[in-house]
Amino acid sequence: MLKNKILLFAAFICTTAFYSCSKDGLTAGDKDYKTLGTSPRDLLTSSVYTTLKIEIQYMPGYAPEDSAIDNLESFLRTYLNKPGGIQVTKEQIAASGSASLTLDQIVSIEKRNRTEFTGGNTVAVHILILDADYNLPDVLGVSYWNTSICIFGKLANANAGGAGQASRRIYYSTLFEHEFGHLMGLVNLGSNMQQDHKDLTNGYHCTNTNCLMYYGIENNNLSGLIINNIPSLDPNCIADLKANGGK
Image (tube, rainbow, N blue to C red):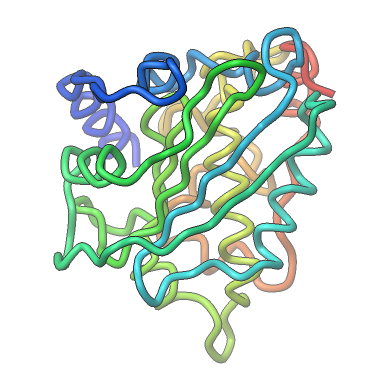
């Protein structure tokens, strides 16, 4: 998975063009399309942004269950200081028409469809749920910009909801929360470690195999890690968030 992560970051660095249209006087993306790990305090604290808005866009056949969204909201209320509240919208967008997608193609889909951007007293996060696989094998989700997450619904749906599998509610809740953990700076990705717990082999993940931020959560190992429960953040990850202004 480390090799996948290196490729993801290399692809991100090559994708630097900003969205050019404007919305309510704000140049779309001027506070968003930035390097992953630059906005943990914007999410964790209320010093600049008092409200969080999450825009979920999904392709036909891949609408997330409301209960998974409820779980994500509950998770975020536990760790984020957002006295103005957390708002979530979801919307279906056009199918990709592809079996697999590269990061550059995912970026293009987001830029064509994203409508919510950070500005005023609101920090915005975009979650994209695709009908295609990633072009690297066995990847269930990626967080690739400071406020951008992608879930690969085709692979997720194939591994959830069937006999002997975790429910889609638990599966998607776990993926949402794990990827949001990266936006919040875990592990050592903008929220500094209070104790060393970074998995050096699988960068930006926790060494604790029972932690939500364990590297296996975002690849096809997830099926063997969850059945009836969503993993929690371990004490080291919680300490990192608190030290960076989280609850």
